Amino acid sequence: MGNLTGLFPGPFAGPEMRKKYAVAVGNFLVAFNALENAVRRTIEIILQQHQREDLLPSLHKDYFVKQVTTLQLLSLSIPDFPDLPYDRMTAINGRRNTVAHGHFDQDLFSEAYKVVGRGKPAEVTVEEIERDADEAIDLLHEIENAWAFLWFDDLDAEESAGHPSGQGAPSA
Image 1 (cartoon, one colour):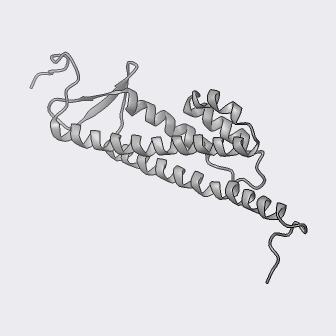
Image 2 (cartoon, helix red, strand yellow; image 1 turned 135 degrees about the vertical axis):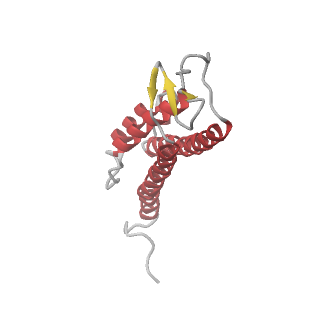
Image 3 (cartoon, one colour; image 1 turned 135 degrees about the horizontal axis):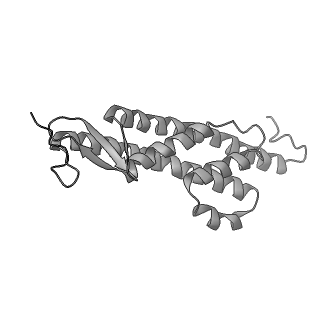
C-alpha cells in the first residue's frame, strides 16, 4: 500500500481516539487547574499572614512556574513548612503546556497520533495524560496538607494572645 502521508491538509483523528484523548486532556486540565489555584491560594494565605496583600495583584498575573518559585521562597518564612515537591510542579506544567497548546494529529489508518505544538510533535499517550492527571491530584493533596502548617500556627497564635500565660486555654 502506498504512503498517504501529506494527502490531508490538516490534523485528522478518528472519533474513538479523539474522544479518549479529549476525556484524558479534560481530566488533566481540571486537575492541573485545581493545583494551580491551590498554589495561588497558598501564596495568598502566606502574604495575608505577613500583612502584604498589596503584593497579590502582581502575583496573580504570573505564570505558574513563577508562582511555584514564589511559593517556594515564601514558604521559607513559615516555621516547619514542609518542603513541597516544587520540581514535580514545574515538570507537570511543561506536560500541561504540551497538551493544552498542541493539536491532536492522528494517523488516518490507526490509533497512532502525535500532539503537535510549536512545530514539534510529541509522543504522548492517553495513559500518560491520565497519569499526569493523577500526578496533579497528588500534588494538590500535598499542598492542601501543607495548609495545616499555615492554619494551625494562626490558631496557636490567637489562643496564646488571648491568655496571659501564653500557654493557651487553661485546663479544667
